[in-house]
Image 1 (cartoon, rainbow over the protein chains, first blue to last red):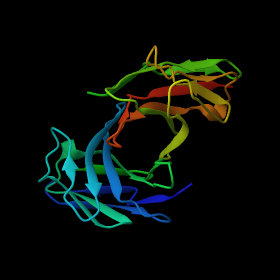
Image 2 (cartoon, rainbow over the protein chains, first blue to last red):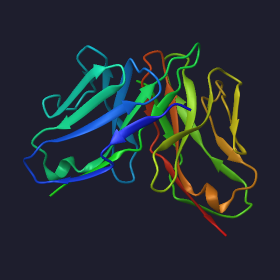
Image 3 (spheres, each protein chain N blue to C red):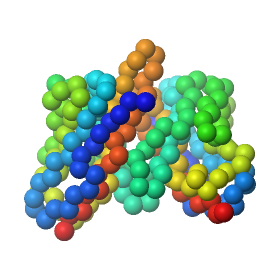
Length: 117
Length: 111
């Protein structure tokens, strides 16, 4: 299947700093990418939908000024956690859809574990 | 709005036991249904899917049938292995392409 690469796989940062997470579709073009957050022992919560060349659409309750999403090309989307705080510590996962014919299967990155200290 | 409800875990079974993980959904349209698996230390992988009523998805010995009348998509496997230990997520995707996940069920298989 198609490959989605997410980088870094883990990061530790100091409170108040910003962290950027990259999501790349390696062998297909993804017009739409999704960003999820997974709390321990909880489900994946959709944060935002990222469309290439346009502003991201955020889910209710997600602070768009805190979680900046950029989808500059058909193979790259980035999530920047600005002024991170310990409560932002979580597992962040991106997903990209490959549209080939009638198939719209989603492929997931391996996730990024963010720890804010 | 759309939602997915799956059985709470953890589920602990002995090797070769029969597995069922229940999943029900609420949707306004005609969603596609999925089971994703997250093995320890790895990312999410699609396990199986069904795109319309009465479809049966199957992979690696796992099966799930899209039951519109009961709005269910229960995951089953006849004989589990230790290597099946993972977290399983039921999910749906509707017209807007967003994937809505259940809370996940952690499965432990004992040798």
